[in-house]
Length: 61
Image (cartoon, rainbow, N blue to C red):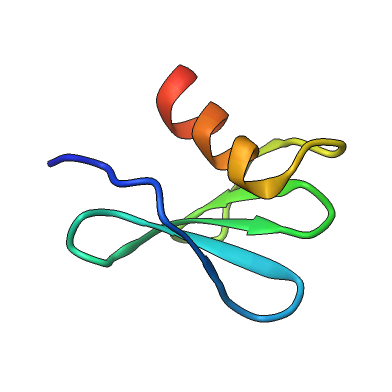
């Protein structure tokens, strides 16, 4: 399954990363916390934009 990086504005404090079927695969909170679809914390990216955090965690790790 191809993962499409699509950060969509969710609530004011988080963005969602969705796959090609529009299923949420991650949540990126405004404080830099990166969580999987079950809201388990998988990392932290404090001082970088949320779009870059999504790219890093899902394509480079």
